[in-house]
Amino acid sequence: MSLAEEIKRVLMEHPEILVEVLTAKPEVIYEALAKLTPWQNLATKDDLKRLEEKMATKEDLKKLEEKMATKEELKRLEERVNSIEERMATKEDLKRLEERMATKEELRAVETSLREDMRKVEASLREDMRRLWLALNALGARWGVFSEDAFRSGVRELLKDAGYTVDRWVYYDDKGYVYGYPSEVELDIVIKDGRTLAVEITSALKRGDLQQIRRKVELFGMVTSRRVDAVYVITPFIHDKNPDAVAAVASSMGINVVWPRP
Image 1 (tube, rainbow, N blue to C red):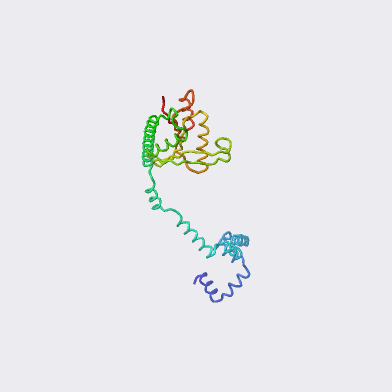
Image 2 (tube, rainbow, N blue to C red):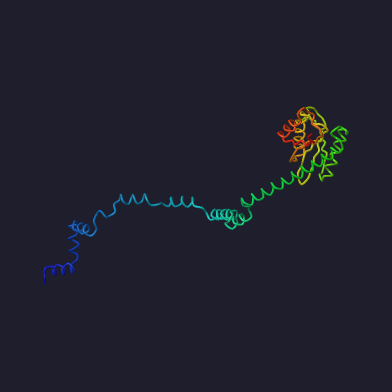
């Protein structure tokens, strides 16, 4: 039997010998541990302290739990999200809206059609006014055959015969907006084809009358809140050295003068 085998047999039969040796020589154990597990891989107290600082404590977990939403809060949040989703438009909603909206081409077509209708109305109005003046000339109103009231009544009747609706608007201007002092203001409102026309009927038009006519129309709009599409003055005579200049001034003020040119 070899020496190694004999030593092994003795240690197996008498293990107390090994204990006595290790107790007397502990460095044997350290050397063995160093070979099995290097010291640099073993955790020190400093390592444990740093690990403890990084790990969450029960207090940290409690604070986190307090910050986290409860079931009720989550439920309320879900309800709000659902409500927002219900109010938001879907792609299908946008598609249906797009189908109902007019395109630029369709809007241009409508605008062209409206302009054409306006041209037709204006042409019809001019023709009606031409016929009116033929009737006035035939009656001799230009030479003062009628009084002011008779002339106005005659023109109103002619307008009605031409298919117009004529309303006489009378208002007491207590603030003196038109003439500068309180007075009764009168204006004829003529309606045809959905258009509202303010018409001043006078047997003679003077240059100074234009401002008063414009203020009459402005007062009518302020009092009635009705929109006036056009303003006309119907007269057989312009009392001025230059009638055409008066008509031009009236046009620059948005007033159309209808009168039989000589």
